[in-house]
Length: 496
Ligand SMILES: *Cc1c(COP(=O)(O)O)cnc(C)c1O
Image (cartoon, rainbow, N blue to C red; front, side, top):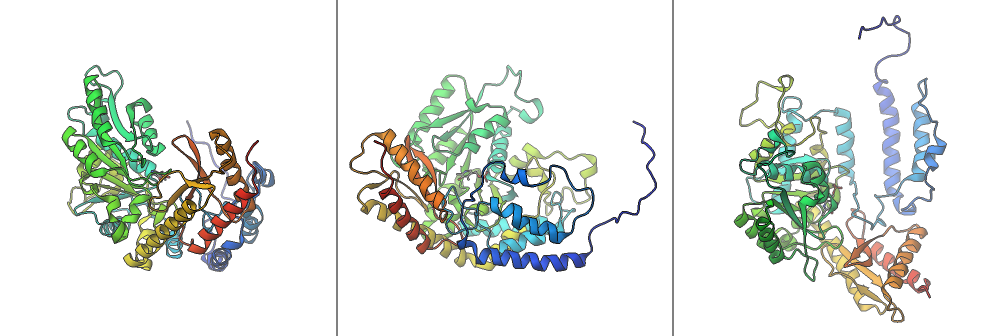
């Protein structure tokens, strides 16, 4: 295409806004953030908005002329805030809260200001090295032995995908990154294993990796919803006999539904015997290992080939921040390193230089280490452990209250800081009626606005699930939630 002639330069102002504008509005924005956090408890956790509410209120096309920051920021209050779900609220007990602590927020601000791309050591030496420092500090806090390579990704879904890609590339003689999977008569169908309770990201990885979702074989769980390691060994044996090629096992330390912890030592023994890559999904649960008394949550993980833990889940670091550890640094690099001419640098090959783009699909990488490093420093190892210990204590207390209350029952053993329960009035036996009753209790609690709780299924039963992991959540919030749940249950009649 021939490039067209352009009109002469216009007199529209060019370049960025003046840094003085940042000073003025930045101070106001920081005040806004401090006020937001100070007043967070007075907000409804779930917004009262209908689908499409925001879209209906904003112009359908961008402004042709510049708008003043005052107006834009005012619209954040007027248009955006009414539709925000307050993940920062101490009343957020759904899913796993991703709470941003003050040092984490400051870290994000500075990361935005620097806007460095930590793809190569050269493109930001300090960002690369601080990432190595922060993940090694966290390794020590988790009680994992050195040396252990770590890299920060956006999410556990990416970390698990990369770990399984490394596992796939480690299959002897398969050379899948070079030869692919399609049309290969020389290669049996690939299989990997995870429990019935494993996170959907483990299955999603199979969509990308070419194993298909059929490549994941789900292993049965025991009474406490932990992977049955004998069933794992049997499944591998059966698959080999039927011509499959097993290559990896994913164990979960802290499942999403109930926080159950798979027996990693037994799974590691099987993986070692079978020559399979062992990846541990500790996205949520890994953080508990920062508490010395809870370190057993990662028992056996020193034998894993890779492990993921999300600081954005239970380590008070703002979205997004997921750490992938591996004892097989070269294995991960072999899966992903691909360096075109324009990305070669003079320091390539120096042992002290790590180019973090070599460990995943993304070239561009945010400077996520800064916020993590700031959080770890601002709280210290003891401060982090104290917060997590308290969450676990309060969750156990809630579980005891549930057990002691007629008309209520636990649906899974309380583990870490997750409690799965349901109301079960003595007058109701029908499972479908109980599912319906508990769904209505959740809806009623959420509609009141003080709390946000979500559900899961435990062995097919509808469970109210409460996860206590927000940085601002205290015992009093959990007590108030329990009171509200009981009150709501008393006024929610079971379906006739
Ligand atoms: C939340 C969660 C994930 C997914 O985490 P993302 O960072 O959102 O991808 C994976 N595994 C477990 C066990 C989780 O609880």
